[in-house]
Image 1 (cartoon, rainbow, N blue to C red):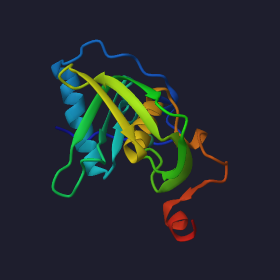
Image 2: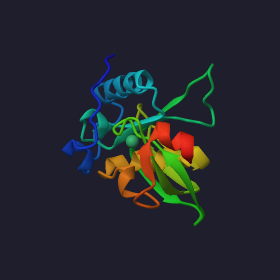
Image 3: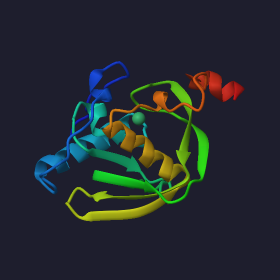
Length: 169
Ligand code: NI
């Protein structure tokens, strides 16, 4: 396993659309998932998309906040994902990103979504998510389309250093 370098905002790979993965369940994909998991845990993140580690493919990982606790951390890998909203309801919350360290932005996301994709063994995943779980999946999915949360702010000023926002917002 290896800790990978994380691309920061300004790097062009973060603005590119990614390619579908064809070799589902391959050792190569598993290795990427293991390295990304190690990288995310090292950076204390809750989600990480392949373009953030300079890999231009449709894959992201995230920690499921419905299961996460100090004792048990579950990392889900989602390959070639598709998402759809299952209600029009939205919610606004502050989001961070490992590619925009130290900053937070207020972002509106759908409250409830359905997502599908494949796990690292090539098995189909179908799940419904709401709240933080739904937010993480929408954030990571955006990365696969070259979209950072800074282009989804509820208002252009709803962005700043976490240490200030935690004090004043
Ligand atoms: Ni991010």
